[in-house]
Image (tube, rainbow, N blue to C red; front, side, top):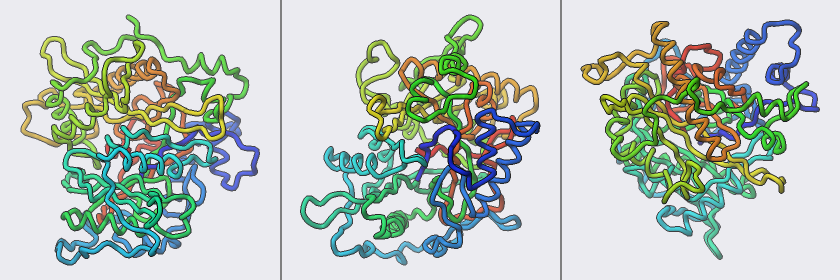
Length: 507
């Protein structure tokens, strides 16, 4: 249930309810902070805000929060905050499939359950329309995700997907309109070096006119029942909302590309003392040149790279506390099936119906894959803006570099590698990631994206500042259903050059 439609922090004429938020806005707009060191103030405020989030009392950049004590539904579910001294493991250890009901939960008589067939063009369009009109909006309700049918099919039909986990609610009569949906897909993850077969739950959406019907808890229970019947008892999900059981929190950062459009749409605000032209020049992405070259061997990923990318991702992602474990089939689907159809359009590095871009670095001598990086497209509708009805946003996806691994990682009997690096190696990793990110920023600019978004995942703290990403107002909370942890996982906020413990990207 990812909630990643977030703007840059910006000034407001309203009296701030939260003084911490007000100071955050001052920092983002380079306003005076009474002579205090801005980096220190920013880190302190971030830590204070995260403490509030983990306590369940507030969230940053998201309205309509509830105290954890008010979540009557979640108080009945197997979710818990990390507790020191406890052991990682299931909250409800029951694994007897026979205990789970074979009958769907009851619905009001005017509605009925359906398995949504995403291979059916009309049913896929029904889901797309429901999400585009009723799913995630930013705090001001001016931006709303504009999903394509290709994106939804790509996200919800990975290898091994279960049609019964694409759960819909339709009106039982008339045109049988789709009014609610929740999707889950199978995913194998590594949590603190324990392998879990889970479901990734996403796209929980109820039609705006039916929010009072309390269908969301019923949808969650129903998809849980269906996963349980397949022997899957844990689930991962994310959201901007504060719910019980947060295991980590990451922050959004935004790299401006089309500055005039970002200002026109209200995504960004003019900086004090700077014209739009100066802002655009300050955010310009440098062209590939002898002084700023892209890595030698950098090219688009191809089918022949699947095995090499899979091996590199497995090794690189093993360094983090929460990460997916990709099979070759999953790598092929995730990074190649959404690359679109036909040739590039008008010389731009994009194809018809493309939703994901994946690139590798191939060593010219050995022909081995040494680096990998990817991003995906998720545009937003700009509500009420006739001049710019769509904001084209790119989102950082998965990446990996062997610079973070031992020199003999390919032949090593070890399958888990350390996250923390010595100073010299950390410097090499930072340099490499900056070159990779700069290369895909050039791609995204050439493609026509307006902004490039990232979270404080993996080792993003190596490049966020150097590549001129700006802090956003959104936090993304991570959860694991029916699994308790002994400690919080670092979400990379305020960590300086230390990397995050989270390496799971939720679409």
